[in-house]
Image (tube, rainbow, N blue to C red; front, top):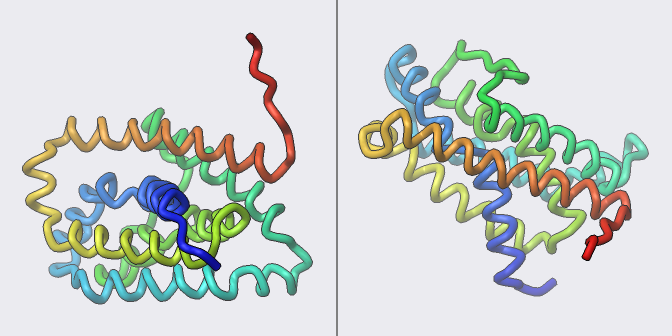
Length: 194
């Protein structure tokens, strides 16, 4: 177990892109309008607990079903790829339910700690040390808390076009991440043509 700044930064960027909290601002504002108030501390804590549970016991849980982390990472790369396609093309492949309590459901789960981000946590374990993923996760929780506190301000600053640009940029990053996860866990090596 050793700290690696490069791994922390890479894991932070992957999680930041897949959670896509800036891209979720319009959804959060809509839920806030429908349910009244969103509690940033409660949402952040519930999301963190879900992520931490999968980070610490996700692999043993998979072992019960006879699945190794590499196989799960390959499956995760397909989910990340589809989420990235949603972001880049502006299509909806995964339906999101906007009913229920605004504090925990659907913001903490499944908007923040959804299938894609949970899969990503397990996929990252195939490449990075757990301590580095944990630190990256903590930094992401700080960002999530700040965004939830300042949602309305972010919307005014970025505007609709700014949010769309941000979503497209992170979509392209996610496409690259999905391809890298797939190649790393399948052992396929791309040969550079020179």
